[in-house]
Length: 174
Image: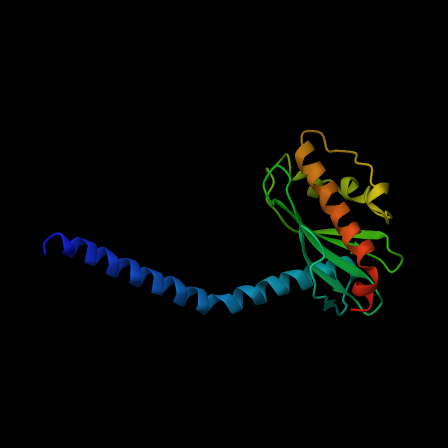
């Protein structure tokens, strides 16, 4: 009996801890989803100004988190890509009604401060992608000292363009 008591106490502790985790998850999941949606909408507004947008349902490819379309057929593609950090680049790529990149906004950036963060902090780096409509057109001028982050940005932008071009009808008619 004395050998069973420690195991029983440990089992009770684990069950109580598991129940508390489930309870806290249920308590916060709606608020977390609401905050993610607000952040996404704020990024869409930063790209296109004050506008309504409609989220499009579907699986549009690896790394594509969300796609939204405005009433005037502008598209925002949220992409998560690996830079120096796994999943460290989370951007929103704005594609205008002509299918060209019109802007890039950062949802989050988990790259090394001072090095990888240069892909966000140097405006001319982002601007090199503007006006591109096909992933074959993107020629990278990498940021010195941030090669992995630069290549991650290139990968994210190409993924957004590919998702848009391969699913254009479904996205715009969504």
